[in-house]
Length: 238
Image 1 (tube, one colour):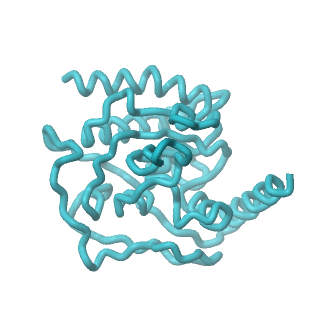
Image 2 (image 1 turned 45 degrees about the vertical axis):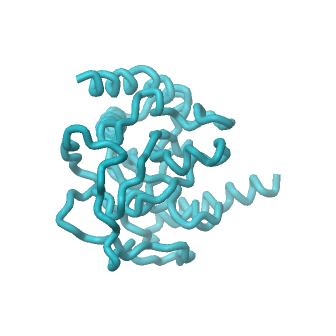
């Protein structure tokens, strides 16, 4: 009970800070997804990470922190800056909160869970901290770093090779907003095509082996298993 109360208190403080003008890390917003070259899969070559590429690192964050330093290049905004991982899965989550975004989740993951940084690769906003349907890109994606969103699976498979996408909201009783669903569809379909991930490997968190969670909520889970899987299967049959 003490641990639960401490967790709730810490969460409340972080959300209060987010709403009171406290400076947070800012995250790039994904605005466009170029068409992947035909046949691009996990074995396709990719450039090595530049020696000058700064990373956020595992250092603790202060209450008033500066913007994340990320490499700028001529590539599209979403493009990884390091050699691409042979991703095998897309794991979809909900935050189970009414509000949130990449910055506040990053703080929560660091200060409460003591992780090195935001555990997800992407966060899809609901209008509370980022625009409804905005795709926020986490530093793990740029660095092509393993996830911290799906622990407990055999050999940590779904963290090591799973792209984590979190939609802000609680979707046990209702679906995400239309803009969130459109963003999820666009992002998941792009990633599935780029890394040749079949619909059977696009799952909700609760479907991962060994998972004991309701995440991403019954309504979003149903959407994944029906509409999203059909869209991915249609893309891959063309």
